[in-house]
Amino acid sequence: MTSLAQVRRFRVAVWTVIASEALLFSGLFGLYWSYRDEYPRAFDAGVRIDIAWMGGVNTFVLLTSSFAIAWAVHAMRHARTRVVARCLVAVLLLGGVFLALKIAEWTVHISEGVVPGGAYYTGPWNGRGSSLFFTLYYFMTGLHALHVIAGMVLIAWVALRVRARTLTGDDPHALELVALYWHFVDAIWVFLWPMFYLMRA
Amino acid sequence: MTTHSLPTGRAIVLTYVLVVVLAAASWIAASLGTGTGLALAIAAVKTIAIALVFMELIASPASDRVIAVIAVLFVALMCAGLLGDVAFR
View 1 (cartoon, each protein chain N blue to C red):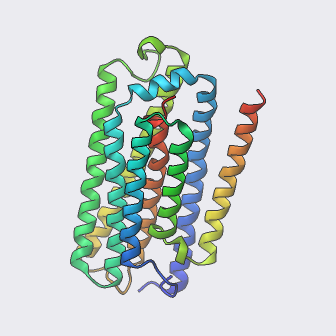
View 2 (view 1 turned 180 degrees about the horizontal axis):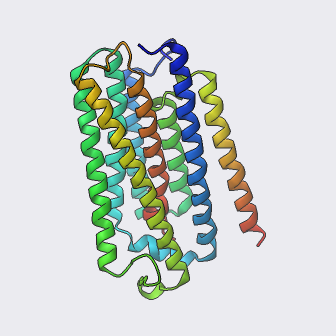
């Protein structure tokens, strides 16, 4: 059983990680806005090239996964282990759907010649602005996808502990902390979605 | 943690409905060409809802809230610097 003092320390540690990650992403958001101001037409064209329905579906997928893990935490506190297990499996499946759509979108872009490096081709707006937009697109969505993968590994670990009954309603803190991280990953996507899929002039 | 008043199941469900409705509104507004400001404002509201209810900041100890608030303040400071740079180029 984890003591209350230990739980407090772990929570502060996870919140500190989240704060650091928020600052990392905010630096990248800053780069995006700075270059968007400099190349507004190229960034507008970049948003139009991105596949809107995939970004939209992925948003609803991540929001639903966030709800599922919040519900898992709620169920864990009421010792409803079977519900917890189902919710965690749902989160893992939704995370898998998110990554599959992301890979599919990247594959479409790459097959159309929108690739990192010097070979970007983005139609009439081809040039430095488009290159910057897609460099940021690949880097930021890629970094976010790595966070999704890390979150899925942590959730799988928690799910295994629930199955082995080493994580129970009496000591739900590992699940609470992993859920915190997963919600943060969701919150980052909430901002990436409009930046790369919605904001057309 | 468990000594505080945690979000109820009803609050969790209502928050989910809220963020889904906001996401749909954001998508529809973008398709109507409402510009960048509204999409960002909706994203901020969604994030606040997620932080308060799903991340349980509303029921968290002061230590967690202080870290979250300081992170937001630093992000705001950086955004202000950035906007200043863009505005006076």
